[in-house]
Length: 318
Image 1 (tube, rainbow, N blue to C red):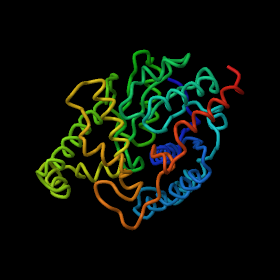
Image 2 (spheres, one colour; image 1 turned 120 degrees about the horizontal axis):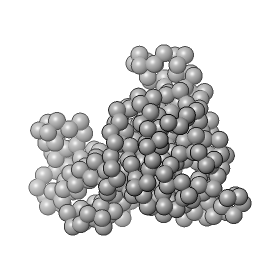
Image 3 (tube, rainbow, N blue to C red; image 1 turned 90 degrees about the horizontal axis):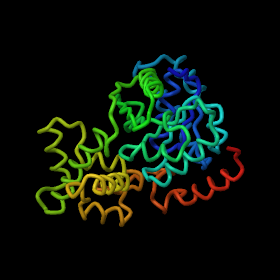
Image 4 (spheres, rainbow, N blue to C red; image 1 turned 180 degrees about the vertical axis):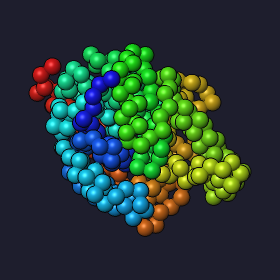
């Protein structure tokens, strides 16, 4: 099993900063990357706030919280973040093109022994790994939002993932305090495949006027003991993210995953959930948009990142 001392996290959005938090608490030197300095500042502030809250709740000691906070470093380029890493965890938007671009660049930057992981919630690790010369060292590590609270980690074994890389991902997850399940790659893995169907059916019910969003959420929480209703959850993870997953599952698994027209309408209208201030529900206090959102109005787009990565690739020696 590979020895991991330094973890790089690519993307300081909701998931990336949460993964960085968990890695630091797990004792790893952690380097969090984002192209946007504002995203890194926000991540630093949120990590500090969440660690302070953990101290208040008695989950960590003040000294352990301070030590974890100081384990996190920040970088404004993929090359700066990844060149010394033993494990790189990609946490960019849920778009195959973006992930392939990142893995292409990482394969050139990283040492041959570095393991590359994707936080994708549904996309093919095998396809992502195919653009590298280290498919055996590519693995899925699907964390859940909010990462510092959610215990589950899905570790996904792609077609060519070797046992050493899989064992390393499992060990890292355990040191982060996660309960780990191992999955043979399939579209949507376990949770996204089931959750996407539940959430999509909820949109069909809302579209058909069967019940209000609040009553559908209440029914699943009180009748099925779900901690959150499907609309509360989709507002948290992002309607655009959910739509991307459904479109991929529809293409891969067939008609039963066709996105509900109402969900498509909401995304077109910019109703992306908490990050945009309005999704199924409204958030009148206003919640700043996530810089890693795929919403073109609020983010550096995948195309922008692609252009920057193309420039970086031209200057990186393979």
